[in-house]
Image 1 (cartoon, helix red, strand yellow):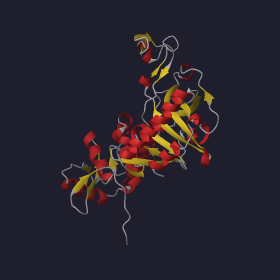
Image 2: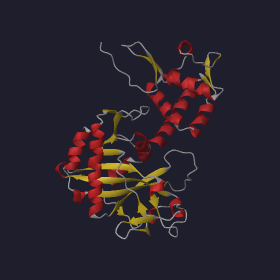
Image 3: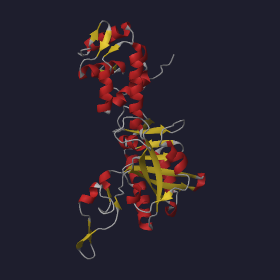
Image 4: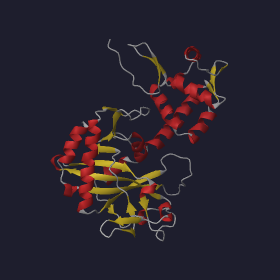
Length: 340
């Protein structure tokens, strides 16, 4: 499905059927935020009552944003962990996906979520306001179209006496009343709903507009870290890399390495490192001016730059254009099956 088709579906829905949801991220019972483990978060959906003016605003903004993105005429391709979203839109299928966020789209949104009575009532040390979702009723197909937007902490304000730990409570909130032409104290709880869309969900598929925010919303970054650790574990089994503990340390300190290791897992080179492959890596590194640390026929990691070079080799980083013959360096790219 294209974004044009999604826009047509949204436009065909009725404004009065539009629904707004808040999604919170919840720390699993008995787990501390500082705990280093996977799957430590769950997600919960709340329905929010809104007036007709806000409902129309959200409807109009969604159409406007989809048209804006469509005009850019970006290529749509399957989600790739390394590729950036500067010139692409991505699709991500939720089929056979067991991440915690799947419960949001498969179960919670289609049920009857609890209604928000107060924002302060759903924010605590273990639960945080994570994203908001707009639902559009596709009556013709008896289905819903959902858009998602990540909520930044600075976009939420709660009165200080209601929640002493809220950062936004350290400032006063005011509103300039154009009728009285006075700056007035704004009381109560506020959440900024902006015009941006991070992704659209329909028919088991996410259509990704803001890749980084999408990864945050659905918890992919946690999944990346989990897979990165699995990759290093398999590297250890080959017995062909010395100093892997330094990569383990880097996984905890540097989220950027997670995606590189996930990319490496897709290629599979890391599973079967042999002395012959190490020799081939040395030839490639010499060609491109890289210094590959090799000790007794094995890859060795002694400092951070060794990690970078080894990851490049395992990701088949250096590529050559068939037409231009020019060399390129990139972690991204999709394998193409050649015609026989």
